[in-house]
Amino acid sequence: MDNCLFCKIVTGQIPCTKVYEDENTLAFRDIDPKAPSHVLVITKEHFGAIHEIPADQGSVIVQLMNAVTEVVKRENLVSEGYRLVINSGENGGQMVPHIHVHVLGGRSLHWPPG
Ligand code: AMP
Ligand code: ZN
Image 1 (cartoon, helix red, strand yellow):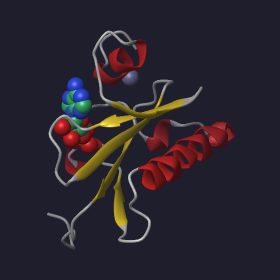
Image 2: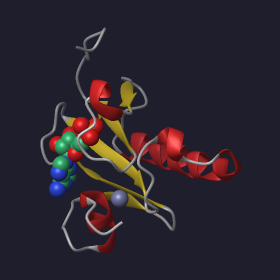
Image 3: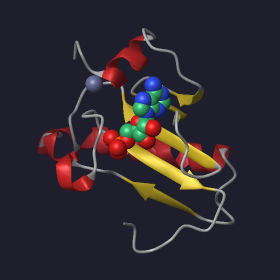
C-alpha cells in the first residue's frame, strides 16, 4: 500500500534492522524498544489488522506465527519467556495500520498491560 510505513520497510524505501526474513514475512527491531528484546513481525503483504485477513487465507496467519517462532528462538527468549502483542484499532493503541506482532522479552513484563 502506497503510504504505509511498514510496506515501505518491506520494499526497502525505509531502512530497518532485520532479525528474520522469508518469502512472506519480515521481522525487524522496533525503533523505540519497550523491552531489551522488542521485534516487530509483519506480513509482506499489506493487511490492516488480523480481522482483515480473509478466512480463506489462513495460511497467512500460519506464516506470520511461524516467523514469530523463529524470532523467539533467534532472540533466545524460549527459556525465560516472552510476550506477543497485536494492537488493533484506536482502543488497542495501534499506530501503524499494517499487521504486526510485537515480540517482547528480556525482562519481566507487567500484567495486566495498561
Ligand atoms: P503499534 O502501536 O502496535 O501500531 O506499534 C507500532 C510500532 O512501530 C511502535 O512500537 C513503534 O515504535 C514502531 N515503529 C514506528 N516506526 C518504526 C520504524 N521506522 N522502524 C521500526 N519500528 C518502528
Ligand atoms: Zn502496509
